[in-house]
Length: 125
Image 1 (cartoon, rainbow, N blue to C red):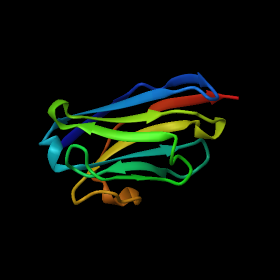
Image 2 (cartoon, one colour; image 1 turned 45 degrees about the vertical axis):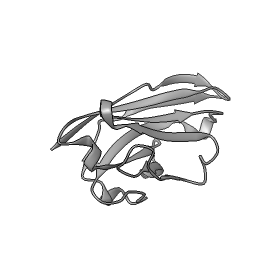
Image 3 (tube, rainbow, N blue to C red; image 1 turned 45 degrees about the horizontal axis):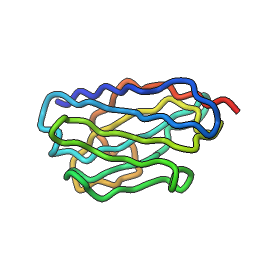
C-alpha cells in the first residue's frame, strides 16, 4: 500500500505560480512512477504530468501545460512536486497525485494504483 497526501493548492491570480507537493508513505516510494492529474468541475480527470521512478527520471507533460509546469521528485524525502508557472484560469481544478508500477509516463489514470485526496487550485482571471 502507498498513501499519498497532496498540499500546496490555493487561490492565485492569472500569471502567478504555485508549487504542489505530494508526500508518499508506505511501500518504497522509489519503486513507483508518479503522475499528476486534474479534474475541473463537470469534466473528466485529465493527465497533467508524469515522471519515471528514478530521481531525475524522464518526464512527460500534457500539451496544455508544457513549458509552464515542471514535475520533479525527491526519492530521499518520498515527495513529488509540480511547479506551476504562468497559471491560467483554465488550470483551475482539483489536482491529484498518483503512483503506479512500471517505467512511468502513462497518461491513463488506470495505470496508477494509488491516489491522493487532491488539492484545489483556483486561478482568477
